[in-house]
Amino acid sequence: MTLQTCSFSVDTRVTSSASPLAPLALWRDRTGAFSVLRALALAIAVAPALPILWRIATADLGPRPLTEVSHQTGLWAIRLLAVTLAVTPAVELLRLPRLVATRRILGVSVFVWMVVHFVVFVADKSFNLAVVAHEIFARIYLLIGTIGLLLLAALAATSTDSAVRRLGAQRWKRLHMLVYAIVLLSLVHFFMQSKLDVSEPTAMAGIFALLGFLRLPRRFGQTLTATLTLAIAVATTALVALVEAGYYTLSMGAPFDALIGADFSFDLGLRPCWWAAIAGVALAILGWARRLASPNKGAARPAMRGAQSR
Ligand code: HEM
Image (tube, rainbow, N blue to C red; front, side, top):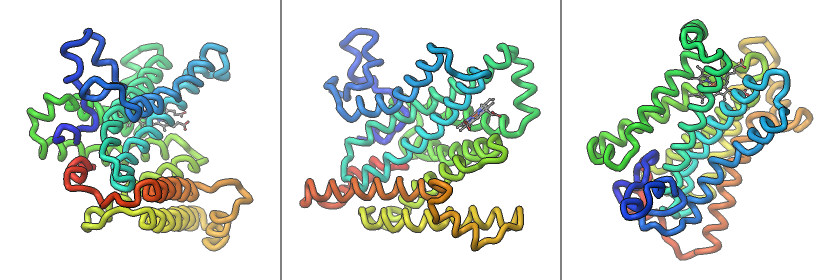
């Protein structure tokens, strides 16, 4: 069970007796059996590549194809980072410890998407590493992104079962707390490169805030329920709206009440604060559905709690 706390590790047990390619069969569990949850995680990690590949194949990437691929890969890297961090609250809410196995596949996929994002940037500079290095040190948002990528590489490098054993569970867990620094760096990178329209980074920041707040009940010895999830989602939505309106009031002198009004009206489409609400309501509905499906299941068992290190 201890090893199941590892989110980025690669499963090695299944593979020794099978073909050398067996480690790539990520949809199999530790016993070698097909796992629906792992297959689903793999599909979530890989599916966003399909429309990008299709657009490459049909030359439908606009006037600056590499820039467009860089944008798409960056977006999916940060979105999948959010999906990865959603696993822990989902395990607790749905009382489904088996979900933990999806976290390592999702975590590895974030690293792969970030590497592709970086490689596309390098390709855009015609693989001239001197130019790449110069750009990274000249533009702070690139330096911040690079630090995030290096930290994630450290997590990926310590992701094998043998690395967990070598480090020991406690040190491994402490090291993997770096994921929160990676979230912060990714968000700053996202905000800084967005220039004028910061709607999408603000929406992502709201979702990450929600995922952070959903971890709080456990810190205070409470079990995360669907009702609590909904309450936290409402509070996070309000907080994002307040912070966003406060920022524009302070930086541009725009009237606070008009900004708050705009945040909660749908005239301008879905404002960024609503994405935390959508994510929270979706999780709460899953929680209620799970409860209806198996009303007698108790709160998270101790073994499950151990599995939720992040
Ligand atoms: C923590 C790692 C990283 C994450 C999560 C990340 C994520 C993102 C995101 C979400 C965007 C915005 C995409 C959009 O708005 O459509 C972006 C843009 C971009 N990123 Fe990253 N990135 C990371 C690291 C890097 C690194 C290491 C580099 C290169 C050194 C890089 C170069 C760029 C560039 C050039 C853009 C487009 C900027 C523009 O169009 O002006 N990123 N990234």
